[in-house]
Length: 632
Image (tube, rainbow, N blue to C red; front, side, top):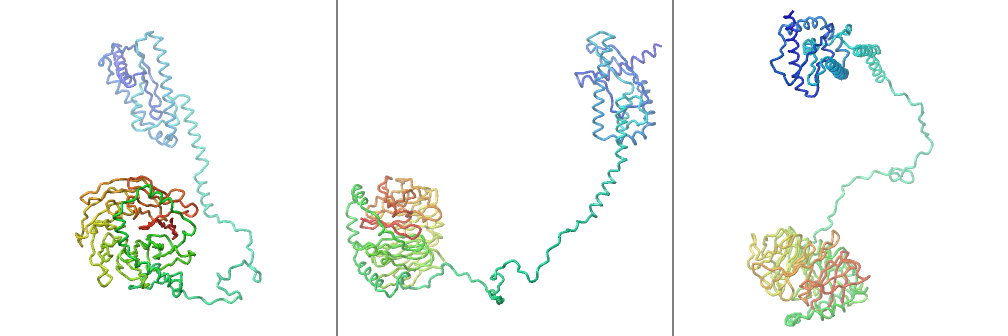
């Protein structure tokens, strides 16, 4: 008797020890282990042992389960497992789905909680102690562990050991499975698929109308059908390759006759025009220029008064060329007023403002095939008008002989600008768009250059020679401005004497002041006009003034180029984007001097401007070929 009691106490102690470990894991509740439904061994009756226990007096080695009891329980579980294993696997694996197993686990957790509550109440009634813990266990726990490891499930025929709820649930699952199996849904779906594949679209019952042989159909273009209006078919035209003509064919080399495109060559008016300007140009301007050099600059007040007297009228506005104007020049005559304009189309237009009506004083010539970017009247002989073009030609228009002579030609290159190195206009410096430069001597026969120099610039936009020290010339590139010495040019690669790197965007032009060359004005796309002190050409030229001015002309307008007034070399002239349209004059110190407003006569932007060297006459050209002249 005592032996059996000791064995029972050891069994309870072992279960208490196992249950304490579970308590340490959860730390909040006393845990009763109930395994999932599929691991419950049928035919066993759970035995519950109620033992007073206190965590405060617990020792790990106090409660131990006898080994004989463990072996006994394991033998019973193995025997029961072997009997039902085959039937359990066959039945429950067909019935239970993952979703049903989740539902079963949830129900079991609810049963565990309710069992805990029941046993806790019984312990309280029996022992009436708040400090003791109640530990519940079942004899079938080890058998459940063995079954769950092998994934077995109880059979559907024997429901002993299950609650009424679980029995009802398993019965419903079995009935639902049998019901869906009796419906044979998969076979019905397969038959429907075969019927859909075999079904053919029904034939449309609508009958197509028959075409009437003698009836009139839709109207069709006789031209598209290639049929003559009388009904006779036209012969097929043979397809010929379309030859695309060059928009700007190069003109033949050599001299070109001065032929006016808007006048008759044999007209007495045109002959009289050439004869008049040949006689006017014989007047030497050297003495006049020397007098202007010796004469002191007029004061700003008198200069402003003269500018205020310059007006524009409908008689001084006229369209001279076809397309935008790229360059302009004023004849230095003090008797008559002649304006020359170079256009993007390669035309050179001449307008004699002293001739009335104004339409009869306009003559248009075509000495080039591409834009004319630079125009100058020769300082030695004003009867010569030199023009430079993108097409790689430099020509001299002679009014006395009525021809355009070819001075320099290079079809492999494109010219951008030029200037006279010598006062007698015998030697020239020519800038190329690819960054190279050419020295041209007009006294040598032929149309080639004397020397071709590679500069350090990738592009050259403008070239201008110092008016006093003519060995120096300035070039405007993309972002830099260089000053070179013509005596130290190297054909392979020439290094500049001075580089101006203050510009942050594309440069449009750079010019020395006209009388002394002590100032340099530059036009840049960063909306700034810069004036430098070039009185002493050394290693560095200081920046004097920066003038804020809108230079963004856009795609369709010619770029602005600020130029000096030949009479007042401390003032610059530049176009404006402001409204109303105007041409503005600034002092070298940055102060605004004057604005030429024309009202209705000046309704467009004059990008290119030129001032008469001795008279108060200003000519501005826009991007449609129209010239606006302000004069007193």
